[in-house]
Image 1 (tube, rainbow, N blue to C red):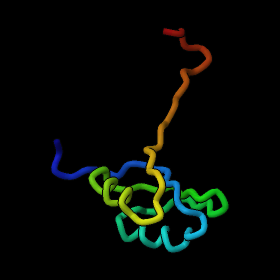
Image 2: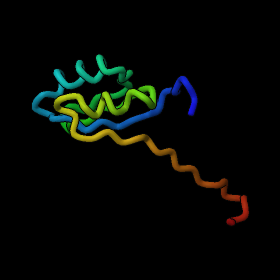
Image 3: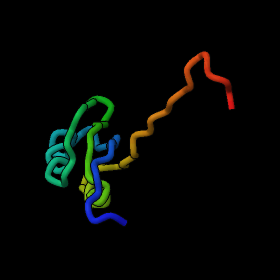
Image 4: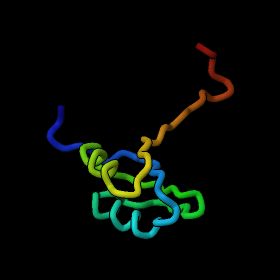
Length: 80
C-alpha cells in the first residue's frame, strides 16, 4: 500500500433538506466539489482515497460511490 493516496472521483448522495450544510462539511472532510445537484441531493468531486471513510462519516451524507469510467472500443476494433 502506498503512503499517499491520489484523488479519486466520487458521487455523494446527501440529505437534500440540508444540502448547503452537508456540502460545507464534505469540503471540510477533504472533498473538492466539481458539481452540485441540490434538487437531486447529490454532488460530485474528488477526494483522496484514504479520506473516503471520513467523508462517509459526515452527518447528512447518505452514500459515497466511486465514479466509474466505462469505455467502449472504437467501431473498427475487433470484439474480444
